[in-house]
Amino acid sequence: MPLPPRWTTPRRLLRLPVLALLGASLLACAPAPSAGRGSEAGSTASATGGVRAAFSDDGVAWVSGGRACVARVPSFQPSCPRLAPASDVGWQQSGGQGADAWAALPGPGLVVTLDRAPRSLNVGAVVLLSSTRIYREDGSALTYSGEAGRGVAGAPLAAVTGGDGRDYVVLGRELRRVDDGAVLDRAAQPFLYATPSGAASAALPTASDGLSLYRLTGSTLERFSAGQVVARVPHGPGQVGLVRGEVVTVDAAGRVRRFTPQLAQLN
Image 1 (cartoon, rainbow, N blue to C red):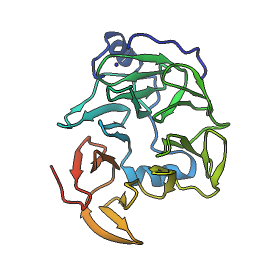
Image 2 (image 1 turned 180 degrees about the vertical axis):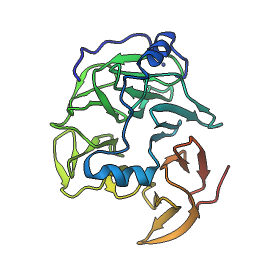
Image 3 (image 1 turned 90 degrees about the vertical axis):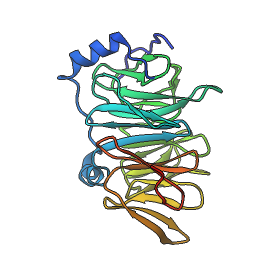
């Protein structure tokens, strides 16, 4: 993956003419992303319906079938720029001006912003994004300023920035903290989610507000608290996260749904 990092211009869902042409020309040759790898691939795709997503206080970004989109608060109206097939999405805090939504494009070896001021970074064979790092398929990493960042030795299956601001990955079957390489769990599950003190893994798409877990089973959205399910609503496969105190889900068709913490639907 290692091509030399290089910035072009700076940020949000403006459509770069160059990238639009790039997306069209590389559509046939760039690989479509898989929902998971190895033995986890089938179960992961089934649980999510084939969609990857990232959540922040600014909204939700997702990629399904290689198409990357973003929906920002307060309207949550989806915007999907024309790009080469994407493998992942992520949010990066941009000072006091909110967060930028990024997409990883492994075919052309770029990460690009999905909206606001256009930015792109030449990174090589990018596969995963967190809030602080861009991960290549060999586990090496860059920051969003184009500088080398600490990565891992090997291909990570999932990456997330925890509630402590540090990065965590699933590598093989291990949950690792990237900064110091500490192995936190030797039987990690395929899905990672942030906790107030770091991150944890789960067998299903999961989000945590520190008091309850919210998880998608493939047929329901559940709130899990004090060791039991305390609320449940019908919901198909997808991804779940938290946006400004709301529970937000997105499915492979790009349908964004919002719920209160008690799972009363808001839209």
